[in-house]
Amino acid sequence: MTTPAPERTNARRRPRTTREDSPQPQLKLGLVGWIISWLAPTALMGGVLLALSFFPGLDGEGYLTPLIPLLGAAAVLVGVPGTLLVNWLLRHQLNPVVHVLGYVLVGLLYGPVVLFAGAGGLVPMLIPIIGFPAGVLLGIGRWIAQPLAEITDPESTEAATGSQTSTEPQTRV
Image (cartoon, rainbow, N blue to C red; front, side, top):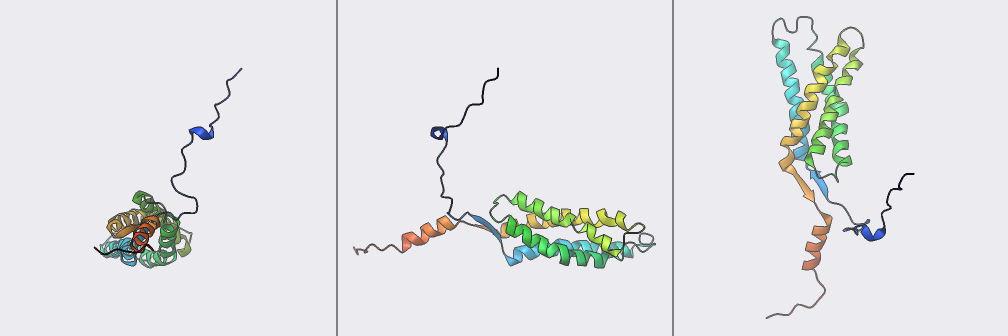
């Protein structure tokens, strides 16, 4: 016969430190931080692809040159909504590594945009050429923009403004 698992009673549970309806702290990234974390890596990757297309023999078959507009389309169609969605979904997650991983995931989604150019031939093999570097660069861009992010704690702002606007009469000394 087995011993049943012990039940956790209410006496051993810790009381909640915050109320359920109280607002949670948020990690906010401003417009400048978002532009640095999204546009800078995308422009860097476009510049690298453009530079690689000028090397003789490297772009002999013409596979790299069409990737530049595809990267721009991926940045606009996947990158903009994806990074904004990551910022909004993870706004209560204060750990910046989680945000960086979300940006990496968005960057990896740049790769399948190549399939819109056509699924024949070597085109599907080009997905990692866009997806992996875009994921790494977007993650690095988000990490670089971390000093521009701020944590807003609604409880501390309420306490700070509440102490300044008290209804008790002030006595002058």
